[in-house]
Image 1 (cartoon, rainbow over the protein chains, first blue to last red):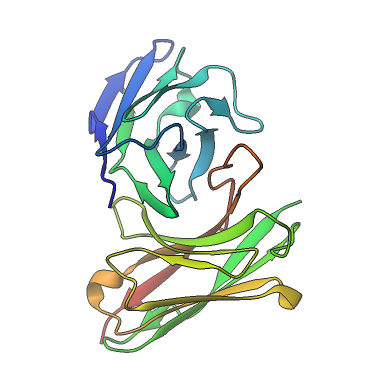
Image 2: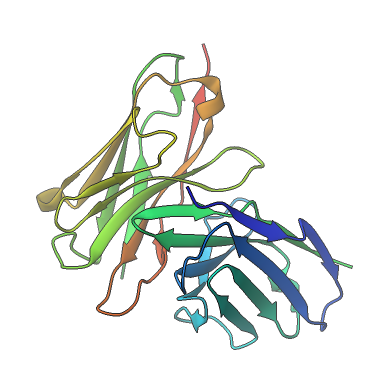
Length: 107
Length: 123
């Protein structure tokens, strides 16, 4: 089973600044990588799929990059509504695993 | 408009079998490339993928839970059912169903989710 490791576990950033979240796969997943945002009491929301394609309605300040085993989610200028938990998730060979999440908190 | 909604018992006893139903609208599970999956999240913990069923009735399961899970669909009712046997308190979680579709050259990610249903396992 492919293991997804996210870092850091918690990231403290001030509003207006850039946030960079990392995700590493234990083996190559090509570009089969998605990112989700989850706020307390809510279902996750798809942000990025195919490693770099924004889902419908996702603001341009969210961007994804990477392929193979190393991936990054960048939020260019943090808004108050962006403070949440972020998960990466791989889909490869009909197996889907999530990372343990990065909590993005206000500094 | 795509919607999904989970339903099932809020409380089950240890060793019992859990049956959850996902009722969806706005798409058809008979459309090529369309799939529905179950994902769970214990309180305060990360998401865990459980199972997926595709348009062709192929089924895929989490390696660690496959002996306990069964996923099925009723295309005419727009429903997907998950059963999990031998429930344990560690299975206490919010259970979500979500849609994913496979295009000719891309995979959507889980693009629509239900609101989730909390299942507590306790005697």
